[in-house]
Length: 125
Image 1 (spheres, one colour):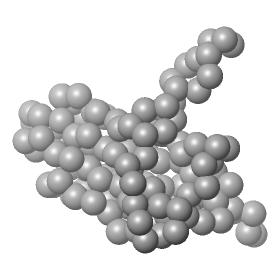
Image 2 (cartoon, one colour):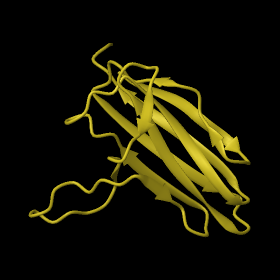
Image 3 (cartoon, rainbow, N blue to C red):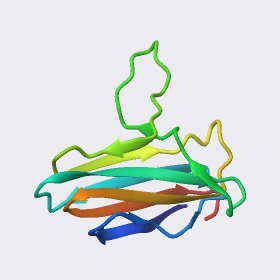
């Protein structure tokens, strides 16, 4: 089963989402969206928790980038939209990490609307 959660919905200032439970997830994908660009940029980042209470900066977001056969997956701390409207797909590294919950922050510089969606795959039907 795939569950869609709206973490941030067209917010217009620096905002952190509510806590999103990913405790039983097999896979978690994140869709970051910046729209209504005039100037400035948006930086999306994730905090993760092992217990749902204590959060830490998550520096292992996996971006949707091409790798050669010799490379391992790229991992980054955040997604910077640059000075434009943009949409990007990222994933959590659940192969190597146990994560119970996440929060997503969109840090705004100047303007725009910022959205983040979380797609959670579980074993449930």
